[in-house]
Each structure stands twice: as structure tokens, then as C-alpha cells.
Length: 354
Image 1 (cartoon, helix red, strand yellow):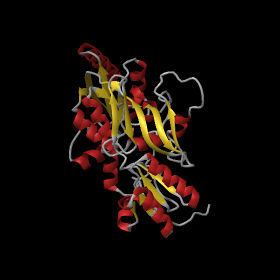
Image 2 (cartoon, helix red, strand yellow):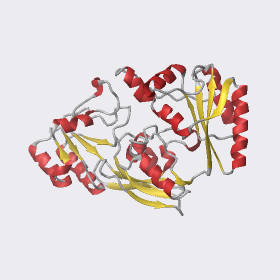
Image 3 (cartoon, helix red, strand yellow):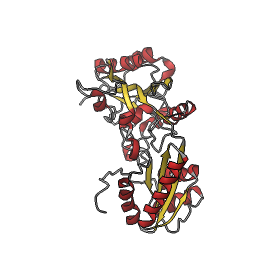
Image 4 (cartoon, helix red, strand yellow):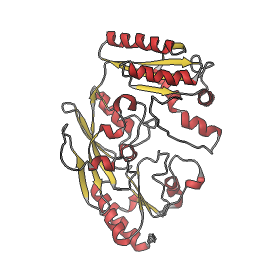
């Protein structure tokens, strides 16, 4: 397709929409927007300009102008993705939602939050926690990624085992569609039996079906008791086969994360730290939630028995902050060893033989 370059008059029209301070054309300032977290320069493409809308209406006006003048636009959240979804492969205009970063409402009675797309995931988690609540979406980049990007990519994360991916946390979304119209999709109703499920179609579409500018997300009461368990296995097969036994047991862990020996060594080197029993390698990080201390104790005992029966050489309570820092440092540790990294996110049924 032939696109129109961003001419002087198009740039002037964009400035009229977002304001001069929110339209960037300086090459040095544009460079970070030429890529996401994929390090390979082969996947980097410079945009012609960057727009930073501060409202849904501004985003809609940009899309209408792009239709009229036929220039490409590329929606962007925080740029923490690993699938090149925010890369401006045809140049054009990157539309970053980073300035739309307000938490508009937290409703503890009806258990929901209304947020703009540029709200950091960790900020929403912290705001919910202050109210004794819990936002279940938890990508590994939660301290830097944005809710809009989470929705656009249907981000998974550590808690998907129990709570599902981002799409399972979303009730409503505000979207600027490809014609520049503002539409609101979904509902806070528990039962929705009529019409097309358009909100779920847009979620995970990587910005190809519209620009997500705001969302209503589910909140949950925070579990009063939580514990992270580290189970270390000599064999990767033993560790992974134990996962199926845990899921069959009815314990319902919040998270189960596996780290293979080679990756563990890389992380330890990067962080200048060691993980308990790391010489055996192949740990599982298992997070448990409970409504009472007795329930947590019961789950912990049962989990210990399952892991030991599965071949674990040690099962112990983990330092939560430390062990999750280890898990979330995976990408950085690998990149510190080589800028050429092939990152894949492969999902298989848990009952498949290894």
C-alpha cells in the first residue's frame, strides 16, 4: 500500500490536535520509539513523528486525519512487548498513550477500576492494594508495561494459572476504531448473552482493530494469606511433570513458574546472587493463596508431599521479593550475555508428555 509521507501541513494539523509539545519530530527523541524490547536492529524502524494524545478525543481526531491523508499510524503503550507490535514498519506516526495515565476510579463495593490506557500495571496493582483489593493481571514487566498494552497483546503473566490472561480481567474498553469513531465495548454485567463479543475480539489484536484508550477492569478481594514455595528438582522432566500433579490435586496455586538450569545460572550471574539449592537446578516457584492460616498450612503440606513424590530434592518457603526478582530478571540476564536473542513464548497443554 502507498502511504503519504508526513508533510508540513499534516504535521501542522497534528500539532493543532495534540499541541506543539505533544508532537515530536526530533530524531534523537524518536529513536526509542523505533522498536520495542526486541533487541535485534533488523526489527527497528524509525517513525516520521510521534504524537502523545492526552484524551480519547485527541486519539480519535488523529485517526480521522490519518484516514483523510492516508498516512500510517502505529499505536504504542510502554514499548515493553516482544512481538514488534509497536514497531512503525512503514514509518508514519507513532501514537503513544503514555500521557493518558490516570486511574479514574477504584470501586471497592462493585470491585472494579476504571483506568486510562497509559496507566502502569504496577501502579494499578499498588492502588488496588491500598484499598485491600487485588488486580490479578501480572506480566513480568508489570513495573514498566501499561494496561492498554496489556490489553492489546492479551498479556499473560505469572498469575495466569489461576486467574487467566489479561482478557479475563477486562470488563469494558474504550476504543478508537479504524474510522476514528469512539466506541465502548463490553459491560460490567456478569451475564452477557446477546450480541457479538467485540471487546474480546479487540483484546489481543495488537492495535490492528483500534486504539484502546481506557478500560474497566475487575478487582478482587486480596487474599489474607500468601506464601511462595521454592521446589528444586534435579531433572527438568520431574519438575514439569509435577506441575500436572499439582493442578490435579485441587490446590489451585496462583502461580507456577519453572526456571531451567541454564537460565538460572545466567540470572544468578547477572544479579550476583544465588538461589537455594541452585546446584541441583530446575526450580519451580509456586505461589499459594488462602483465606486462613490453617488453609495455607494444609496447602503447603500437600504441596510439599506432591513435590517430594515427584522428585524434588528440596521444598522450602521462599523469600518472595528475592525469588520474584530472580524470575523477572530473565530477559535482562539473557540480553546481558548477547544482544542476539531469539525469544519465544510457546504454550502447550499441560498433559502433553515431555
